Image 1 (spheres, rainbow, N blue to C red):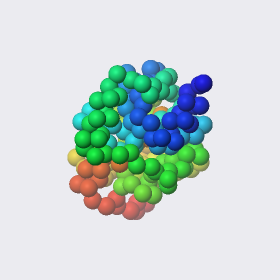
Image 2: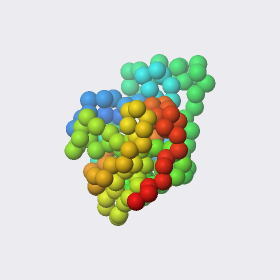
Image 3: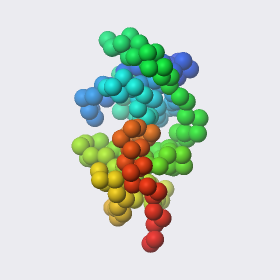
Image 4: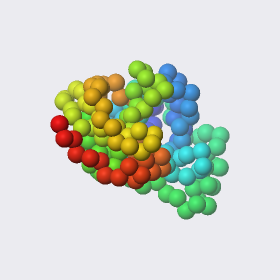
Length: 185
């Protein structure tokens, strides 16, 4: 059974998995499969602190391996039980396209984290889409000092390799910055 078929079975039970994407990063991601389709896999992410730390959406085409029997699995499961943490579904998340994904996140979250790992492997953008077309977008982005700044660069939706939201870091930045200002242009 291929990765896509294995993922479908895992989603039904919120299976705890490790994900490896050799061509994009050397990180082994851990999380519970909470949604998927032919294009995307969504996990409720487990942090190095052994807690649930937001959601990550990966393109299935970038995933080299999804493993539901990894070395630290029992340790992670015990930590989740001790902390009384359970993965939560995201039924409002739209996975029809990367554009719909970003806008469904924006509709419920203060910020979205966008990664374009092939083009800029060491960067991510945290913010809100302020202008977009069918294939491109620009951001009102959040600085590391929790300040909203306009970014006039135009990015392509097709370049997005990962979307995340609801994590401690980006949520804290958004709380410090306050409400997203309306674009005045």
